[in-house]
Image (cartoon, rainbow, N blue to C red):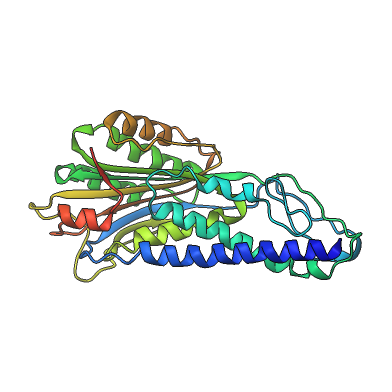
Length: 322
């Protein structure tokens, strides 16, 4: 009996090892660095990922000592991993880097769980594994939009928000989210491109996933000329350019809204004005109690800078024309 269980555990370990390697290869192939010349941009955001009150408690049983592990979905039974844990990665809109980053984060949780349960093969048959309740999930939303350059007043509004908002509080972040979505809702005639991606991840991997997506989007900027993050305000960090109006020949403005929320949100990704309008209304209505983290990133933001259509498409390959 024990021999059969041990073989089953080894087989499952091999399957997940293959999954990890395949994911890394796939991730490397399809997320190559952008080659377009970047423009400077701005950033507003903040948030706090704290352990949810519903997080399961660890309990020690029998001969396991401190090597217990938690269950997700159908749980880890006898050292195996419940496959339903992977199901949330399916259903992400856009099929872009957002889904891959979340997949990598989930794989990281699985690998760490393997490490914590590596002593299973030497455990006795009468060992008992605790079965915990499911942890809470976090919904992650990435809303991206390409606007005609005549939307320069939105850039001005974002800079004013960065200068006046208290991003160290949830109510201040909620104000940033609401004012940003309102600015976009008031000028639908300027919408040209859009992409919306949503999904949910376990609370344990939400912060790392959010940060990876944030880094990916921020890396598209040559510099952050305007910044207000968690109450720390800075501007004109690039000696070669200052925040201000873009060049008159500029064609597009790109804005990314990244949200982490306790609410279970699944936004559509159809490319039409009605879907964008509804998505912005939903994002703007998220309460401060449900808002965990927020980032608003835009480019260009520097005096005389441009973002042409070919640059927009290369930097944001998942955008779809309306």
